[in-house]
Amino acid sequence: MKPDHSNKVIIVTGASAGIGRATAVALAQAGAHVVLVARRQERLAALVDELAVYPGRRLALAGDVGDAAFAATAVPQVIESMGTIDVLINNAGLGHHSHLAEMPPADMRRLWDTNVMGLLYLTQAAVPYMQQQGSGHIINVSSIVGQRPLPAMGLYCASKTAVNFISRTLCMELRPYHIRVTTVYPGRTLTEFGDALLGNRRTNPTALARVPAVRVAQAIVKAIASGKPEVYITWYDWLFAHANRLFPRTSDWLVGQISGRTSR
Image 1: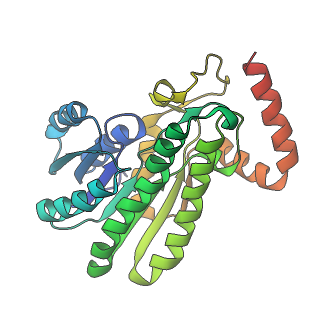
Image 2 (image 1 turned 180 degrees about the vertical axis):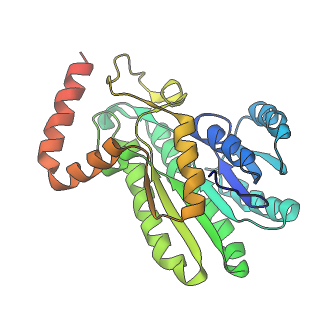
Image 3 (image 1 turned 120 degrees about the vertical axis):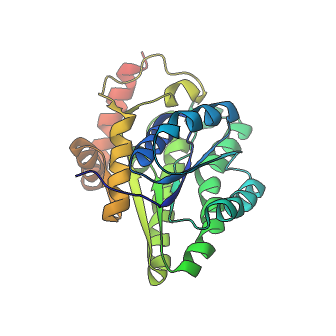
């Protein structure tokens, strides 16, 4: 049985592509009122038109989540238009492929502002409304690589580790207000993420299988109903995370071997 999210007001950041777009479609199919947040206005407008065949209302907000001023104005717009916020899905993110010693400071700031500060800005803006209504759900889309570092992806991995700890802290802090917090750990996913990487393009990525973005979206939609604090998309993502915790040095060696072969 598919989850029914009729009449729920749900914000999805990074909604113009990839996991965010797939999640917005899945939520519209489930009857939700979906607020679409992304930088690309034309893509948001096209998505609003596409979702018109499903029940529920849409609100498109074009802006950069890494800009504190945008978050401060976006959330009140949602309240004014929709009346409430039931779920905030912090999905917007940027990747970067380069060695840390070579990473331009401007890229460092842009990645961290989007992946970490953007999540915090929108969460801080939404929480007071959720506290007032005595309910809410925050879903933070992390990554399986937030569980361990990868060569040439160090700051991206670190940003997702920060997301993990922020989520766990929010879970403890917001429990008294009946606000749930879920962390989602996608692995390799078939999206435009690789095409939008900052830094050096990866010419020989690993041969590991990638799952469709719709599969991650379906897991997110189910998590809204279940309220699970952690969601892994595949069994091998779960195994990767837990093996890394149990055998960190072995994991470092294996990842180094794989990265060395694929970089040649």
